Image 1 (cartoon, rainbow, N blue to C red):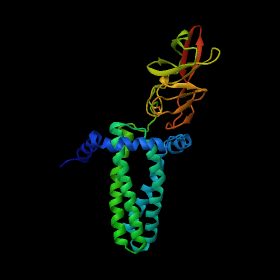
Image 2: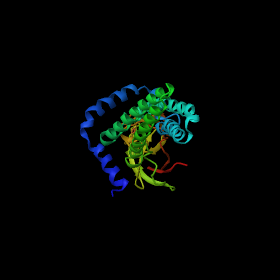
Image 3: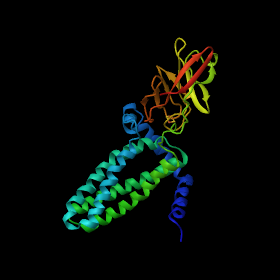
Image 4: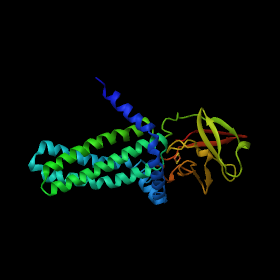
Length: 289
Ligand code: FES
């Protein structure tokens, strides 16, 4: 008998390779990008204000409400019908902000990630409509039909939840791309002062294998940040430095040079800042404390 892994993994890989989904996914993702482009919208939906991606936080609400409704449907019987109905309705309402946050995140994905994200989203939309239908059935006294619709919806959400987990844990979408950088606790020589462009353009250097971007500020001051963007690993040293901040060339996240704080999403995690000093004609760095 096939193990769950032998059933699920080929299913997910088939979605990843289904290039015909691109005809729908690409234009939709462009629309998602346009509709969430404004900085306040991007920051709100990406979780920039929270310091954590918002979508996985919000998905707990509908999934939790619908799961509790299913428990009441199975174990609570008729006396719990009202509570189950309210949970189904609460989950449907809570699904809307979760979907909005996911819509914003999805706009910054490509290729296989975008295809899996599309199926994840369509499944969740279908599940939400099924739960809305369930709520209406329950309100009109058709509890049996409502319970059946909710059961189908919860099954769909289980599959889409798996796909969401696959995107994060297997594909690395939404994870902090500097999380595994080895700290460098002592000062290491990374560049000559003469190599740093005087006009504030960044220079890429390696500190014991960790990419660092160096920026020379007015006077002889040097600032150092991890060069790998926390959002999705973009090369920050190829970004634009302007007004004391750097803009990632991949998805436009903006980080303040002084402390790495995110000024514009989609990034939600602060960019690591390194200590930097000038020793003679050389620049030395170590991990920030
Ligand atoms: S990699 Fe996405 S904003 Fe930098």
